[in-house]
Image (cartoon, rainbow, N blue to C red):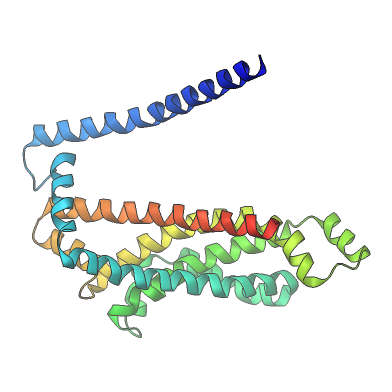
Amino acid sequence: MSRTLLVSEVRSLKKDSISNKITKALPVALWLLVWQAAAVWIAQDVLLVGPVRVLERLFELAGTLSFWSSIAFSLKRIFAGLFLALLISVPTAYLSYRSRIFSAMLEPVIQFMKATPVASIVILVLIWVNSRNLSVVISFIMVFPVMHSSILDGLKNVDGGLLEMAEVYAVGRSKKIRYVYIPELIPFFQNGITIALGLCFKSGIAAEVIAIPSGSMGEKLYEAKIYLSTPDLFAWTITIIILAKAFEMFFLFLLRAAVRRIEI
């Protein structure tokens, strides 16, 4: 009897899973149909191309070496800025948590980074940085305040009771970090990295569109605009969206794997 119930529950879960997938897929399919219908109705590729034509062009581009070299060029620099921001935001957040003076001194810089438009920062940074490495700096400037604030919020929300208990039982610093701080910080870090990944892609590509470094995805977008190649513009935009989502999932997977390892 219990086995029958178990099989029934498994089947029910599978049906629910399929139902949820269909529910999520239907709106996407509907909007794709609307997009295709609008493209057919306008009948001018310069103004709007349908998803079918965009997909065809995407496969055409994927068959060229320049497509993959442009992706590698941009990803290398965007993620250099991301990792640099992650590396620096941890100590700055900790110092801000421990020192009010340091926090007060850093706060204007954080607010400046958050408030200044990407275009203004790009033009300013171009005075000092070569256009080929501009996306490194811009990605860093966009990501750093997000990660700093997320980690700092996590530190401020660490359970005081757990810290007191750790002090009472004379728990060592390494164990305190592993079993108290890290579990409390994980949700804040995860939210921060989710936002940061989207920001670093958007800002990094925007910087490349303005600076037009040779061999970048930003250059390809700029060329598509100059030559009125709307299929290329949509294809590259979709490529950037897919890359951003794929790397977000990859980073979150690594984060969850690291958390499981720490908890062992």
